[in-house]
Image (cartoon, rainbow, N blue to C red; front, side):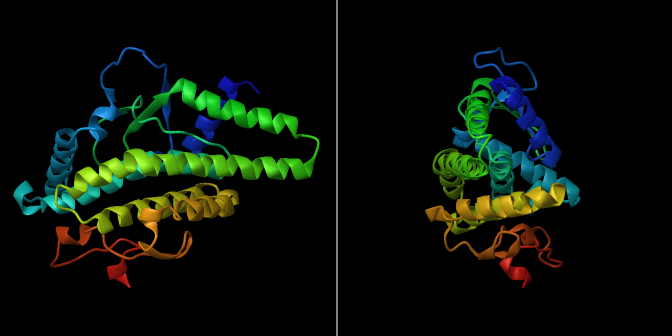
Amino acid sequence: MTGESAAARLRADLAALGPYFAVDVHHPGAPLRSPWQPLGELIGSPDALAARIGEVRGRLAAAASRPAADVEFRVAASIAQLGLCARLLSPALGAAALGQALPVDTAQARWVPALGGPFRLSLPASTAEASTAEASTAEASTAEASTAEASTAEASTAAGTAAIGELLAGPVAQIVRVVEAMAVSPQVLWGNVASAVNGAATMIAAARPHLTDAAAEAAAAILTYPALTGTYQGRPLAGFRRGNCCLIYRLSPERPAYCGDCVLGQ
């Protein structure tokens, strides 16, 4: 299987897991056409992130038929950060569960601004093709030996989680630092990241039950990242509960609603 066809197969497999996992591709340097925008400008600019949070705040307020001023900025900031990190992490985790690596190059990535769900995400084609080409080459070289195949699968999964580690140490950590400076606790923000990892694993298991173990193992490996230790209890897909709250209950404190993994919902 060529690198290009392997990359296309990976994208199809990711899309089958759900909209949080789906990715488009574009050629590096290709003209930027509306409605696509550079993702790096969102992640690298506090002003751009603040504007995004303002849009999320407005949508939350509209959904509750309340003025935007009634929604605490820190609540909107937490929810916006959770959604953004979940969208970045999910395709990479999905690839790891599939035994492949998907580096998410946010400097060259593109996105379509949207509210109320996962936005469209496009990655440079060369990145996805290179990672899947390496995986297919390794698979071909070990096709005759089951033991070697198992070793290759483990190596591919390790490469996938390593790619996610780079994502956590780079763009995700950058987002956390910027939003923290806007008045949200880093414990809450990293708790959001841990919740996004478990949430992605949960979606993978629901969409493709035969990937449940692989998704849980990949998520568990990711959750060993230093900033995520102490942010949760249990294991992915097995009694996972975060150690803090994403603050969404603050949208209606008189009738609070809690997420399924929230510490307040125990």
